[in-house]
Length: 154
Image 1 (cartoon, rainbow, N blue to C red):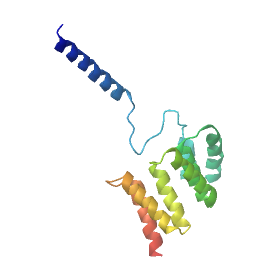
Image 2 (cartoon, one colour):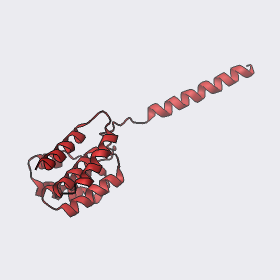
Image 3 (cartoon, rainbow, N blue to C red):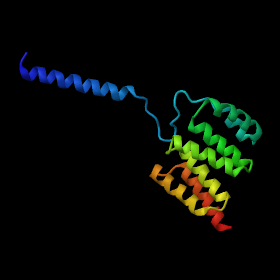
């Protein structure tokens, strides 16, 4: 083999190895960054949809003990906020965002917490964060903007 053939072969191997490494990684959408070890939250979400916050909290507390996962903490924050426990809710939203700073639902719900507690400047900070996460818009951004506008209209 010539020197150029060997170099060509080495480059081809490097390209294939690089391509394999890239394609072997799972592709996650920005708004669905659950890891494969995330717990199934279907029943929790059903309880929340049914406004069975006590049942959701009971299940979430068990999940939170075994899972340091942003979705678990976000739903815990949401459920606590809906029961009026704003201080503890803030703790769980903060933890969710420590684990996953680009968690759009946690940003929306944290902003809604700030709207509900009258901290409009902090709510606007969450709007700004969502604008960065969703340059083309997203449901979380729209929902938080509606909540901010509704509070401003009162």
